[in-house]
Length: 169
Ligand SMILES: [Zn+2]
Ligand SMILES: [Zn+2]
Image 1 (cartoon, protein in one colour):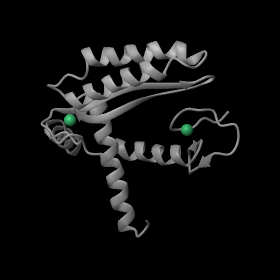
Image 2 (cartoon, rainbow, N blue to C red; image 1 turned 180 degrees about the vertical axis):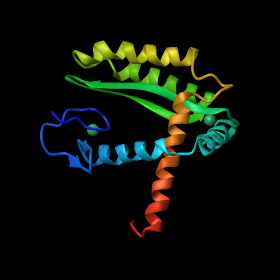
Image 3 (cartoon, rainbow, N blue to C red; image 1 turned 90 degrees about the horizontal axis):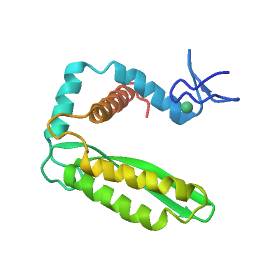
Image 4 (cartoon, rainbow, N blue to C red; image 1 turned 60 degrees about the vertical axis):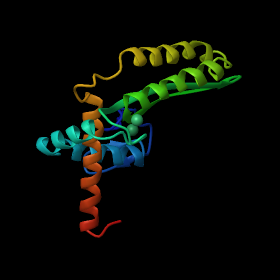
């Protein structure tokens, strides 16, 4: 069975095709294309941009860096419905701590009230936030997550620039 070249999900029927790859939908197609472009971002350009972002001001509170990817974990439930996600954010450590504390507070309040997933996943999300609070990214070096995020941003910018050059919106 064909698999999506970006996310690896098996494609039952349909999907989006380009020359050699298949994708489950337009979004994966776009992301898959970006990944290919990202592979070709020059290392020097990437290093510069990563250092600038890491040492720059926090995009959230405008405070002093270092800035890195801080991920908070969330869950909310209503009877049989439970929904959870992990939200990576580019920000300084203190903004990251605030998001994780908010994640703990909100998830601790509204995560439990769904069966069975609320009861199973709420403690996992709480623990992930607590682990993030005590460990978090090392402030002295840019994390692989930050490198990846900057790489994808540069790729998106390159694609955008080349599309404008070719007159495609
Ligand atoms: Zn996909
Ligand atoms: Zn901040």
